[in-house]
Amino acid sequence: MAEATLADTTYTYTARSAAERDNVITFTLIGPTLAIDWAAPLERAETLVEDPQDMSLVQTLTPAIKPVALRLAQQKVNRFHVQDVAANLSGRHLRMTLWARVNGLRLAPVTFGFDRVDNPDAAQAFVDEIHSRQQAAENISAMPGPFDYWITWIGLAVGAIALIVGNSNRSQQNR
Image 1: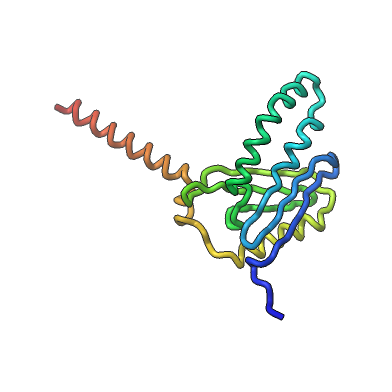
Image 2: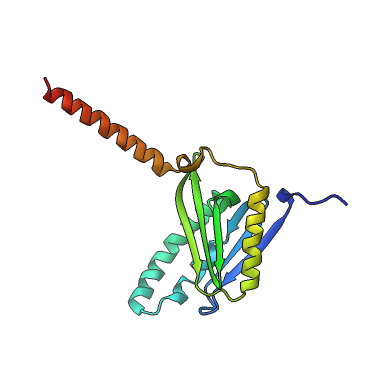
């Protein structure tokens, strides 16, 4: 029997808060990517709100937000390469940061946190699986280190413009 490759394997983990049993999100590792079930947090938005005034706002916004979330999922914004995932379990505290990429560079982080996961052993196995897949996956970084982030390039562009404008102003004053 042939050995399964990374691309052929899936691993699903459902994170649940021990304190708030309805606080649930499902992550699925599919080969070198991590998929997120965005629908579950949207479905329970109404149950998380206690204030009746806030409830009316949630009921107003939820129909507008759900199509956007579904559209993002259809455009595969729900998938992140494992190289763009930072997962850490400290005691029962699970923290995950996932980076959304645009044109090959990291644009914005998406963070998830559970103060007390209900099954720390399963959470640790999930974190270990992410780390294992990161070791096996190819590097997808477009640039090395800090140059892999859009903010670096924006900062460099602003700095270059400021330098050019500053030098232009100085040369006009020296005339």
